[in-house]
Image (cartoon, rainbow, N blue to C red):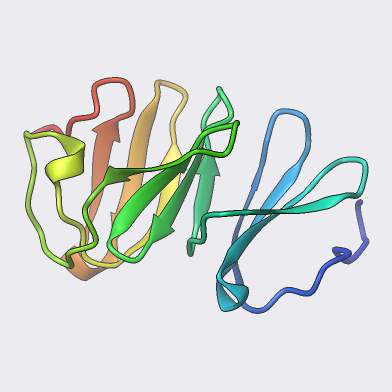
Length: 137
């Protein structure tokens, strides 16, 4: 794969992530999809779409999608993990699913299982524990 173009048509790729096996995940925003290029060269499309992506050590994929963070489990199930799609600021100290984001543009997972969210519309970086599913105060 080094030095090669992807064997797929992309339109406005906005985020990439690699899993432990070396598979490449691409947030293909213009085509409203997430593509996965396996180490064997096959391309698959996930049901979820986002602007930025990150993977945790267990293989869960996190996507910034509108005013939400979505989680895609290794088996393919998609679940909202933060926000409900409302562009607001709310929810520190409470359940992450009750929190409101305003245009999250980037997401990262730390080695201690914290999820960092660049919440552009609210001018801050928010953090939540993926284990506790809560935003700290």
